[in-house]
Length: 117
Image (cartoon, rainbow, N blue to C red):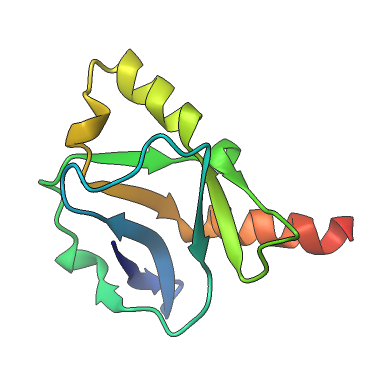
């Protein structure tokens, strides 16, 4: 599994926009309930122009994200929601090669955690 953060200019400042998780076809364990990923820097940084959109992807929405106080430094993705969306789109989940998450959604989940403690 490879994690890349894509950056672009927002209001004339370089900012992270997408957190992308790439994995070889068939090598992702979809049987898990939740996938936990690190939120620690430094990220492997790429420009948004370098994004490879030809790989079969699924977007991870704000509603798919979660936190677990027993897993500090990580955020979770609730995989059953992704499987439901793939099935609704007639996509075989085993063909998905990357997860795309808006960094702003990760930030929102993390800030909600700070305010709830």
